[in-house]
Each structure stands twice: as structure tokens, then as C-alpha cells.
Image 1 (tube, rainbow, N blue to C red):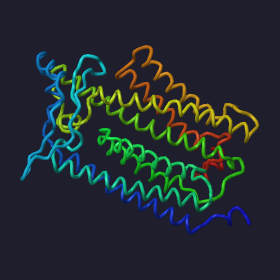
Image 2: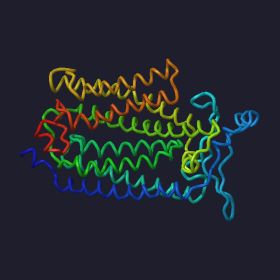
Image 3: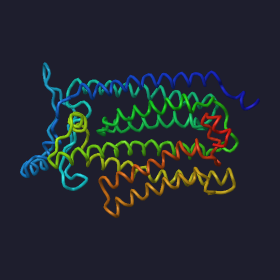
Image 4: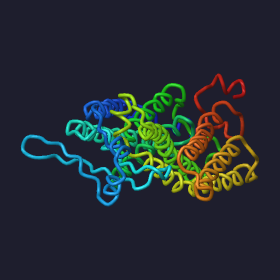
Amino acid sequence: MTLAAATNENLANISNTLIYSAMAVYTLAFFAYIAEWLFGSRSKVGRTAAALTASGEDKAKAKSKAAPAVTVKKAGGTAVLERPEVVVRAATGSRDVPDGPGAHGGTEKGDLYGRIAISLTVLAFAIEAGGVLTRALSVQRAPWGNMYEFNITFTTTAVGVYLVLLALKKNVRWLGLPLITTVLLDLGLAVTVLYTASDQLVPALHSYWLYIHVSTAIFCGAVFYVGAVSTILYLFKDGYENKLASGGTPGRFADSVLDRLPSAASLDKFAYRVNAAVFPLWTFTIIAGAIWAGDAWGRYWGWDPKETWSFITWVAYAGYLHARATAGWKGRKAAYLALAAFACWLFNYYGVNIFVSGKHSYADVGLGALQSVGF
């Protein structure tokens, strides 16, 4: 039996159908997240502004008390939504700012749309996971032998990380809209530009290290992505808080959107924690890749472009964590360093595979014309 004959085309077609179905449900979730922001309170919530303009006595009282619950009155009783947490010390060490009420804006209607969005996200995640599984079953191997498979597995994992954080009662609903937006963009790229027909692997990939090395790389990338999103939102929220602290008047967008996010200090801390938590696994990913290279190519390290950029990414995140731990870097300086590190990961993810020739060129991206001319 030839390698091509081993492909189960029926399962491969089912996988494609499931991926497109997941995209459709993700689209519905995207609109539900939009509705959560729109139908939540569009007026100025004022939690950040109140904290930054309060007197010293008011701030002292805020430190000694838990934040009040966000309540919404309705017929027959009171609906209590999430209670924001008071941040005792901001990233700059000079501001005490409570977390915002969330994307729902403290309203019952916004909260309802948010719960619908999460339910749709769970459904889409299950459908996409089914697409990844049937893709694997169609060729009886791990479903990450090329860039298309890597993309659909990566987006599934990223959504899974988000849902696990929600299940752990973490206040990360603010992550839903940017996550689903980028997941849809990534899947659109996967099914159009990066699509590769289900097929068997080249001999170099026939190893149990494929399951170990690539799966950890995908998981690390998903967590790094979550850290990058929270870092970007931190920069926006920090600018908003700085403007209020200096007596400025933010625009309507900032009042209705940024004030609902967690405080800048919370976002900064969250980004640091997720990056620090996954960094040891990224270290293991590089070591596992070196061991696999020794088995496949007879050498552990050869400064192949993929190896080089994996190491550059490691150095960038190590520098970020080291700067925070020893030099006391927090806030915007650390945020810029973290985003530079994630940019290295992104280039390693896309740029190396598409535009650079090396030992990892077997990771087909579906761009035959580019590959034929040496990319």
C-alpha cells in the first residue's frame, strides 16, 4: 500500500467540514461578544476615575474594604454580577485602581450576551477539536505535520486555554473578543492560504518526538498569545489611567470600553504570570527539538533558521522575566519587551516557515509557487 492510499479521504473531508462549521460558530460568538460590549453600560462606569480622583482618606478606606458588588436592579429582585477586585498597588506603585466590571459593563443585558458568547465559544471549540481529531485519524498520525494543521491545532489550544481560565473562575472575559477575532483571522488564513491536503509525513517526521516537541510548542504559543493580548490591553489601560491621573479627559471610547477592563496593574500582573508559568515549558520545547534533531539529522544543533529563532524567542522572554525579577522592570518598559518577545515567536511561527529555507522546509504551507523558487 502506498503512503497516499493510506489517507482516509472521507475523514479528511469530515475534518474540513468541521473546521468550516467551527468558523461559523466562532463568527456567531464574535457577534455575541460585540453585543456584550454594546449592550453593557455605555455610559461612564467611573470606577477608575473615582479611584484616581478620590481623596487620600477615601483611598485609605478603599484599601481596607472589599470592592462593592456590581448590582443590576430588575423586576422581582436584584441580579448580582461579578464583583471587581480592588488592586492595592498599581504597576507604577502610585495608583490604587479597582478592576472594571467587565465587558458586560455591569448590566444584566450585557452579562446575558456575554454568557451566550461563552456558550458559543465552547460549542465552536468542541467542533474545531473534532476537526483536528478527524484530521489526525484520516492519516493515523499527529495532526501537525504542516502549517495548516499547526494553525487549526494552535487556535483550538488558544481557545482551550481561555476556557480553562474561565473554568478556574479567573476574570478573563475581557479576553473573549480579541481572542475570537484573531482565531477567526488565523482560521481564515489556514483554510485559504495555508491549506494542505491530508497526507502522510515525510520520513524525518516519523518519530514520537513529533508528539512531544510540536505539541508543547503549540501550547506555549497559545499561552504566549494570551500574555501578549493582556500586555497590549495593559498599555491602553495604563495610558487611560495616566490621563485621568493627570487631570485629562479621555474620549468616549475610553470611558465606555477601557474603564470596564481590569486595572492596568491587574493586566500587567496577569501577563507576567502567564509568561513566567509557560517559560519553563518553552525551554523544554527547545531541548526536545534538539534531541529530535539528533535522532533525525545526526546533530543536536545546527543553527537552522527555526532553531535560531526558537532560541532568539527564548532569549527575549528570558530577558523579559530577568528584567522584571532583578531590575525591577514593571509597567510599560516590561510590556514593550514582552511584545518584542512575542513578535519573535510570531516570526518563528510564520516567517521562518514561509520565507526562509532550511531543514524545516518540510512544514508545507501550501504555497507551491513560493517553495518552487526556494522560499
